[in-house]
Image 1: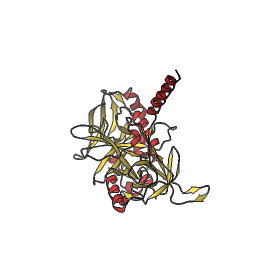
Image 2 (image 1 turned 60 degrees about the horizontal axis):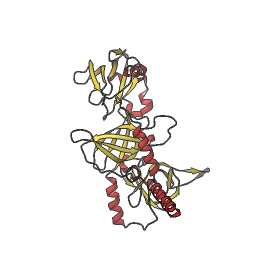
Image 3 (image 1 turned 180 degrees about the vertical axis):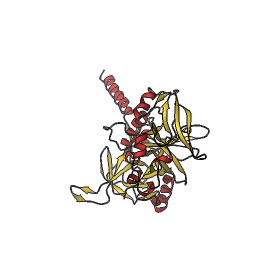
Image 4 (image 1 turned 90 degrees about the vertical axis):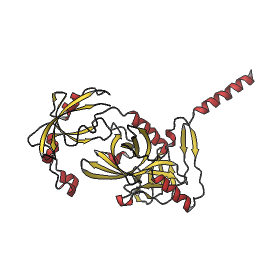
Amino acid sequence: MKKVYAFSLVLLLLLLTSCLPSDIAHPIRDVPTEAEFQALVEDLSDSTVNLFGYYMTFEVSLGSGLIFDREPSKDGMYYYYVLTNNHVVETMTYMKVKTNQGNIEIGDIYAFPLSETDNDDIAIVRFESSYEYPLIEIKPLDTETNTHVQLSVGQYVFGIGTPVSKDNFNLTTNLGIISDLNSYYVSHTANINPGNSGGPLFSYDGTFIGVNTQRVEIINGETIYLVGDAIHVNKVAEVIQRRLGNVTPTLGIIIRPYDDFVSMEYEAYFGDKAADFDPYDYVPKNSSGVVIIEVNSTRSSAGVLERFDLVQKLNGVEIKSNEDLINAIGTLQVGNTYTFEVVRFNEDLHIFENLELEVVIK
């Protein structure tokens, strides 16, 4: 009887163990040869991108990211998913994604924090392309293997990103080491700077181990150098799953009330790049409604509505404020059809036109 009990206990322990995450350990190894490291960097750079953040037509922010997933969209096209920091995309209306293959893709800010209590600095940008970009594997996202990445203090690491200026596109950091470690942050000495935010941190064998997020400059009132923080890959995977799980169908438009749009002091916010921006080039004077300041390129309104369309009615309901539009939308579901009555400037004829446009949620 005791033997049967012992066997049962062993079997139970085996079953429980099989349900736990398996670890990929990264003990300290010899530094790779120069040729090995060059080949590794070249390969990983093909999935590392530069992100330019835009508010309407104004370029505002600079950051980095990595392409980690894709899925078919239509007619030989793919949706690509780019991981970055939320502070890189926050307040932007869209992103330009520069790839190592020399392409510029237009990206939507697709998944991001939805509440003030969600403080994880992770966002996902999505773009559509026919190009077959390679992906960087995020090992803990593989639910079949249920893998966690196990790291060690003293382990060699490096990053790829675009620090300070777009001229530094896909610059590789020096080899650093992990200096401190917890379940959220990987602190390391690979040199990162503004613009590296959102870019990948790698173990020097090429395993993705974190998202570079900040450079630590002051500790206990003392200035320090060469210490940066990356969000741990295991935490990153958890946040990605939560972010994507909260994505819902949407019209894919960003709006501002007409009065706010025409009265904003653009040059004060955007400097010389807005010196020639006149809102009345895009909307008529003495009007009302809400102005579409962005149309997401991978969402339902793409190809139907346009930036600077002035929405005056939705499904026959007069629109004078953002709240009017939200109320007219009601419960948004896949298959819903929305009829927009908009005023749009015709650049060829140099006149404002009244248009009726239908958007089907998909």
